Image (cartoon, rainbow, N blue to C red; front, side):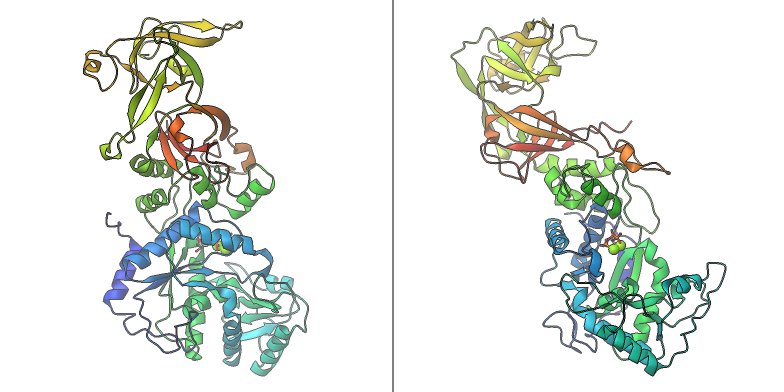
Length: 577
Ligand code: ATP
Ligand code: MG
Ligand code: MG
């Protein structure tokens, strides 16, 4: 395995480790989230990172970038990466999403061991942190309407105005906050705000809300009616878990001053120990021909433009898995696109090429005829059959060969015969010699047509001594080489040909409705002929169907005896100009 390319985040980690920043790190004044993490005890991990999804949807390709970044960093620097559910928002979160996220992280190889945490487990500590701020004069209860508070925030060019409640005493604030927690008030009656600077050029420092009243049922923390705001909760979650490098996307850059302000205040208040976690921002993944916005993905699923969250057309990780993409392909992709601090777009062809490269290495070869047309070998007896030997992987002879039956009536691809060839067409046309791959050389003699003039069968004659692997085979020099299956032995199976979800690189660009850009040809269901050895393919077994692409036995619908295949990706990029 290659040494991963370095990037600016790795440089930060290397410098921090070289400076011994975490050498004598201990757990904070509070026990960590894990059972063995005693307050004050040394932390054996060299660094800690985390992947912190909110369980309000399914993970997509963008999350994969973040997952691999965090887990790879921990792995490469002797650290630990946590999987943490950032479940501080009761309304949008569900157990279904928690389960799907765990499955996707594990599928990608994210090895969090026992370090699976929930932010909702820290609610008691967060209340303590809020009270700590109140007691130090760093937070106050504001009893204005949301509208009034918004109107006082100011703008980039205009400073904000102080709330009339800003000078409440610590005792009054503490009393009100405890009554908020006890459920004495309705939603929105009060909020707890950090007391920083209403004139700060950074609007995020103009007394941001940190706790609000929400009489809502949380999917796992029952009995709460106040919930922390994300910007307050996230730094605390990081600190409690002794995260060293808290990596997030660029839009949080303006939040970093608040992140640092909050943790410094809690350290001063004795609730946290130094070194404190540091937030580092990187550019999110933007990928052409898909949408990675949760809102748009939800719309595609709910309005049934796709067949559910795991539809192989969707850029979700459950979809990718059903599509036949590999975790190794994601890893290669993550390494190839790297990590940077400036936003850019990655072309879908880069992703597909990474998947192709991995599948080319690992997928055994098989034969499938997707658009079958009969080829009749007129000089081969109807009651005869024999076996040909096809290599399982041309670059890996150690994977051996498998028998493929040959008989008088074969299936070939419809496009492998034409009556009147154009220049450069070397496949079947009357009078031409072609090799049936791993079998015989045949000479085309003509075709049959049905009442509408459509070609219903092609005829050919087998050339003596031409069988592949026999001494005479090399004396035939033919340019055309096509695949085939014995009609009597092949299996008729459902095959789904998937392609890009959208027909244009930037769906919904400008004001356009992104649904108008859906690719109507992103899913085509056909009945194909497959070689008999595929009969008992196991769900998720991946193959290259020669000359066609990479296919996977569907995780859900494929059954032993009646396999169903999905096309992950074609052999060549047909989209780039
Ligand atoms: P939203 O905030 O709209 O609910 P989200 O995609 O940001 O959606 P989170 O659950 O907050 O969802 O994301 C978990 C982690 O994945 C975050 O650390 C976030 O920075 C990262 N992430 C999300 N989208 C991308 C992306 N396109 N590229 C890289 N990382 C991403
Ligand atoms: Mg989120
Ligand atoms: Mg987010």
